[in-house]
Amino acid sequence: MFAKELKTSAHPFHVKSTWQPPIQNSVALRTYLEETRLEIASAIFRPQIENTSANKRNSISALKRNSKINLKKADRGTTTVILDTAQKINEGLQQLSNDKFYKPLSSPIVQDNAQEVKELVNKLYCSGHIDLMTHKWLTIGLKQPRIPEFYTLTKIQKKTPVGRPIVSGSSGPTERISSFIQILMKRTRLLNLKDMFRQLLCHRQFTDGITMMNNI
Image (cartoon, rainbow, N blue to C red; front, side, top):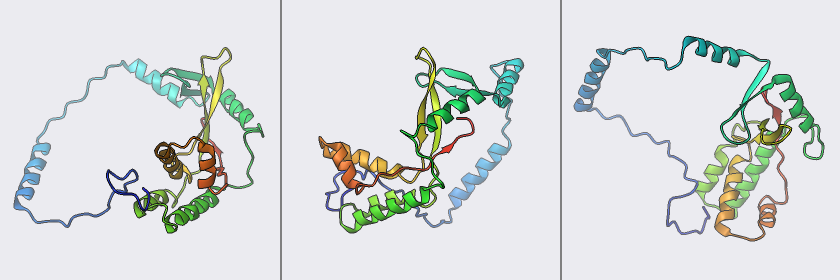
């Protein structure tokens, strides 16, 4: 992970090689493939037996197509919560209107954040702090970063059910550098993790643009 670190174990940010071996002419392999094709062609496939009745399947399909209700898992456990879609959206909008936690943007800043993360990663590599494999892993997700999405999961254990806000940063510009920092924190075992976090990001707080999901 670090440029001057001894390689004693598997790299934590290994990037899979895209190398493909050249095709070799093999009589045995061609024979095997031909026999497999004939075996598949002569196989008899029987329809699977459904473990639910047709009425139940139709009811489930109708629920999925109903845009007036929102089906999502609860904040805890595997319970499914059914809420009115308009009510769910209004709850999310009320949370986003709280300027203490959220700031409206005139335009998405994902590309700007991706560029800044890229410059930071290049600086870490050129300064000899990270090796080539870590640099490659950190920059893979910056080519086409996705705008993080906002949604809520209902806390059913509360007397008045309320949604727990979640921002899904999967495939976002800071996803991989966040994973890098998490592993760095575990390995360094520093007491003051906040100071290290600020130093690593050059005192710049990355705030991703947020889009509301259609089914918050």
